[in-house]
Length: 309
Image 1 (cartoon, rainbow, N blue to C red):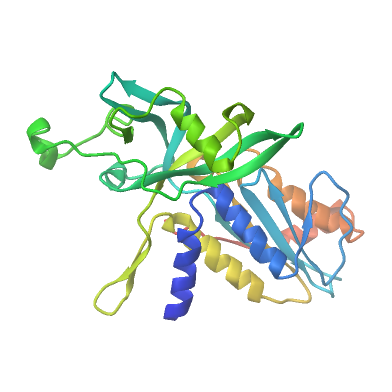
Image 2 (tube, rainbow, N blue to C red):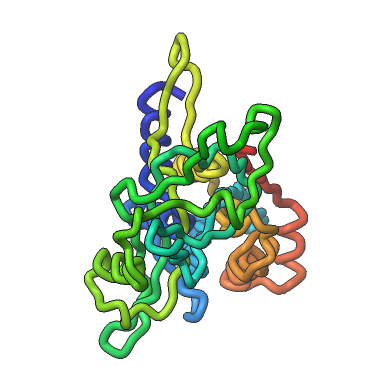
């Protein structure tokens, strides 16, 4: 890739702190490219030669381009994932250590390298369910400020740190947010204020710690890149660009970006769910074929599983 393409990819990664944000960004790109959005709960009326996409849970997305000569078609699939290893913020987030300081209660999501999260500026992002005008609305949130840190302790308090340190995630890796100013309920109020709603309007949330450090291009000849979420947003972005540039009149090109790969993909929006099968089967049905035609198409298809790790 030339430098401009690399910078565009890194800008995409920097701009999408969670799987929800990534899916929303991909959705916007597809809409601008002329794709029509489908809903799983509605009837699909697909036409050869047209482009479509469908989301599940706001964190997984599948797009497909219908060829216009589909007498003997197959599916050409590229699949990546929207999630990355990180720390999820628990529902009862505030841990008040007397009047001295406050931490946030977190749990590990996926197989992160814990040490790389220490001594870096962190913030909060994710999805919040809000009650508005009698309806439950999904809202994205990303706090644009250096809000937290998981600090190392001085070597005097951990003399063996250079011989190997295995942190306890429940004790050593809960991020520091306040030196005593934050009171009970203030974190919920902060999220509500960011969304311009009242705290009692928030019905649920799925929030994560976010590394605030931007992507970097470095090296003697600018040959290296370093960024959070390289696994797997690099593949999500490059697969999407390849998909948008692909045309095949005799086949159906499919782009998938699944959530929850980092925890096994067994959720309703993960790669091990029915999501891909459901979409491909409905495409086949829309073409007027039967199950025999669908299984023949699948048997002649291929899939590239793109995971940067």
